[in-house]
Length: 128
Image (spheres, helix red, strand yellow):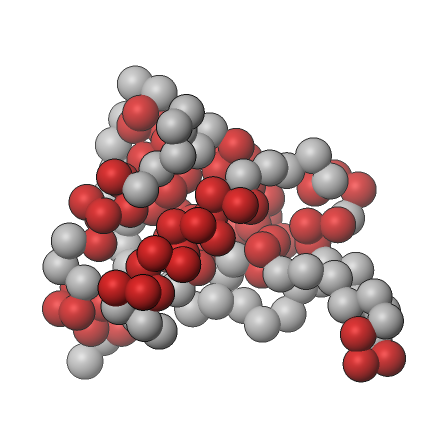
């Protein structure tokens, strides 16, 4: 069974829930956040990962801390919505899918176009 089918079956109202959890004002910084995420290694939410300066002896600068990304915002909005989704359906919705849905909804709320967001992305575990 495809990952998207599993997600759709376990969270049938996902798009509605994400839309209604949009921050007010809407997640306008998320459009740029989603773009920067997709630009480096594909749409894998790796831009949400934190740097590992000194953690376990590592010194990896994450995408979110790279000079072009230092002005990105709305990380807290993504975390807030993700936390609420995890409470409702744990380990089901990837951060990558959530980021794509929230960015699409921000465009829609700004009177932009609607487009379907295919689900089933997997979260990246590496941030370069």
